[in-house]
Image 1 (cartoon, helix red, strand yellow):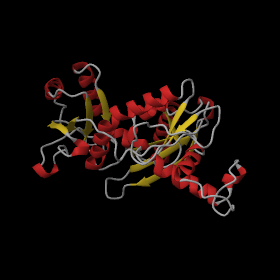
Image 2: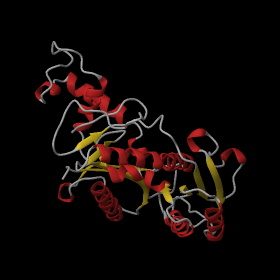
Image 3: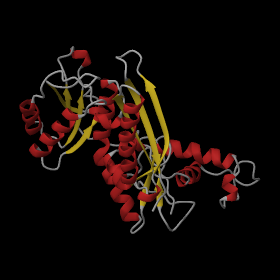
Image 4: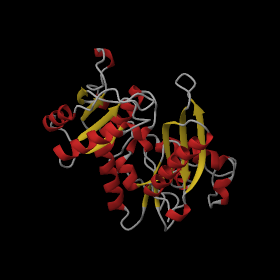
Length: 316
C-alpha cells in the first residue's frame, strides 16, 4: 500500500492510497504544522552575547537552554575541557525529555557532543537526544537550529509512526525524505527533520513523473495530457513517494594532508553513510554510494574539506 497525507499533520497521518503494492507502505508528510515538544538545549562552547544564545522560547523551539564550557576548533583543537558537572546539573534539573546538543567544531570532532549525550542518558532515563553533528552543517547556529527542530518534532514523529503501524499492521512502512528517497519508520522516529517536507518533495516528484508519462506506464490512466481527469495532489504525492528508495547522507568536515590521507578519511565517511542507509531501511547487500562531493575550505587552514556523501539502497 502506498499512502500520502494532506498538508500539515491531519488527525489521521495515513490517508487512503490510490496506488497499492503488497510489499511496503510509503508515507509522505509535511511537518510544518506538527505539534512540537519543549526542548532542553545544551550548547558546548565559549561565552557569547545574549543575541547569539540558543534560540529557545519560540513556539517551534520552546524550552530551556544552557551554554557549558568545552568544544573544539574546526581543526580539532580542544578549546576547553568539557564541563561535565554543568551538563549533569542542567540535565537533572531541566525537567524535560527532549534534548538538542550542539558543540563548537563538532562537524570535525564530535567527542564533546557524544560525551554530553552519555551524561544526559545517565541523568534522564528515557531521554531523547539529538546531536547536531549528525546534520552536518558547518555553521554552529544552523546546526543548532536543525538539532532543536529535530528534537522538538521527535514525540510527534513517534505518534505518526505508531499510528501508521496500527493502520498498516504487518506492512513495512517508509517515510519520504524532504529531498529524495525514503527512510524507515525507525529512522523517521529518530531523525524526523529528514522528512520535514516529505509530502512537498513527493508531490513534486509525482507530478514530474506523471508529466513525463511514467504514471500511465505504471498503471495510471488519468494524468496531465492523458485526456482523463487531472490526478489529485494526494495521488500524485503518493505516487512520488512510491518512486523513492532508501537514502541517507552524511556531511562532515575532514582534515587531510595529501591525497592518500584524503582517500582514507573519505572511506571512513563512506563506511558511515553505508551503515546509515541500512538503518534507513535499505537491504544490507544493496547499499551503495550514489554521490560524493568534496569541497576544500579555502578560508581555513590548508587540508580542510567539506565532504558530503549520499548512499542509496533497495527495500528488502
